[in-house]
Image (cartoon, rainbow, N blue to C red; front, side):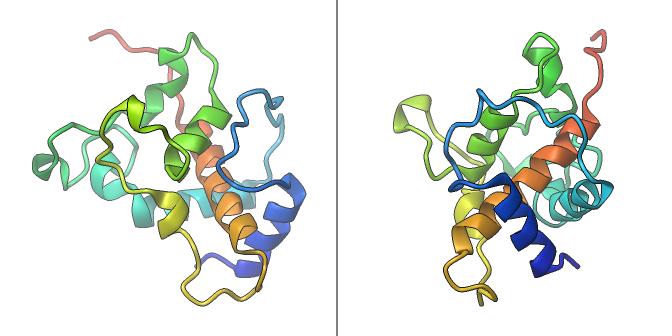
Length: 149
């Protein structure tokens, strides 16, 4: 279970409202293992049904989707070896995407990751950003070299 205090502390450390483009941010060299573990728990709870337990895009719901989910292990490989953390966070959040980018089957997690009963009034957006950042930290650990077809 994700501890709300950990999420709030993390959110305060990274600062800023969720969903703002963070592509210019310098990559965090060292992420505490607890954040990656929390990101993995969030991934398993919310993302694995479509993306699969290992992020390959082979989740149990794939047959019900019009567009197959991406292989999340190859985000960096598709970007020339660079993991675009800000872009990934903005895509997960989903509240700030432009309709010009096409349709979206993936849920808008910026809404879905809000606490139904906020334990820290006034910090709801920071909690959402903290959860998204932990998901991004976890996805960064999944990255593999581009494999031959």
